[in-house]
Length: 352
Image (cartoon, rainbow, N blue to C red):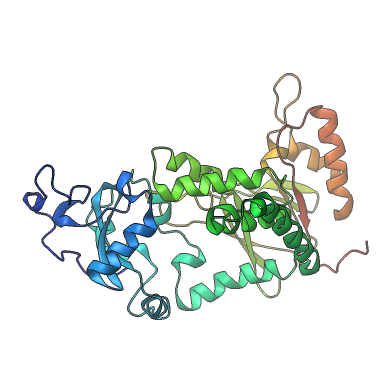
């Protein structure tokens, strides 16, 4: 996205629209083609028309007739993604965002709105954020994932191989990554198709696009430790705050809540967090909503902080087992995902 104004043909003048019955109907102001609506059901055909009319870079309109440039050429795309000095990923610099052309309720706002993620960062900040991603991915069992990819591939191909033809994007390429994500995150396989449908709906910008995007968002608790583990910066993206266990005392760390990752709210405000100094022997107890919001038969929430006060003397590997057993006594029926993690910064790993 670039800050240059988009006015290739004085598109603000609505009088330039075609008269009724003209073959050009279906286009927007200035005769620009729309990338949404009934006339864009076959985007491949629209792109071919744009190439024929304008070449590798073409003007077009997104939902609510927001003007954009569509980069259609392979070489032009490579140049764009490899030239951050000319094409910045920070959507806050986009003229249409700055002047209000893109309204807060735009169906593609989850993709437009700036977020502190790799896709919207450049240079050193991009490398720092990407380091967290690659670090997490390095822990994945690649051999096991390869076996799952082969199984998922065979399953998908078997669904269309007898027909003799297939839409490889809709019937294969969109489904395989979701199947792998479900495997990595421990989600049931049937979630894959639901994720595919939600992703398609988001990109189409339908009336249900925002709701579909909410289905794809994730809550997260981000912790960045100093090299000596003497301090930690904590950011809570729609996730419960961690609990600090220090010298027999248990305290929920007060972290200002930010929006869940991927939600893409235009008015989310700047990313906030809190830094905490750590002492020798400190422990951090992290728990998902399923722990904090577990209820008993009377509707009372599970008193996690109170229970941790009673369990603070136990070793870290045992604490999660004890909390889980105590939760089951408090809440006979667990209705949400339960994840718990105990961190002991600076300590040597426990033997399993």
